[in-house]
Image: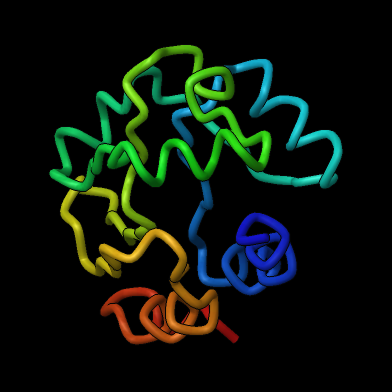
Length: 135
């Protein structure tokens, strides 16, 4: 799972002077349960209805055939997210600086492909101003 992979590199992220926060369309209760279950030391914020993801232009709607397949396997996105939109954000990762400028973005339209934490760490180390603090 992506969140567990991020937990493994949290020390490297923090060593760069950065803060990690995950954003998920799941309900607050669902995100809290995952945070506790996976013993995450970073927040998993809730984005009801994918409103933030929509502002980033990364929301996709499940086609009916994929929705049916998910339901066959007992994966009810509507229940997990607390709405019936059957939308999810594309897997993505951003590095946003203190001036709220996106310095790095990795987005994949294929919902099965998650950004590699190693790519994020490498980008973090290459961003001006953080080079000296990532050791």
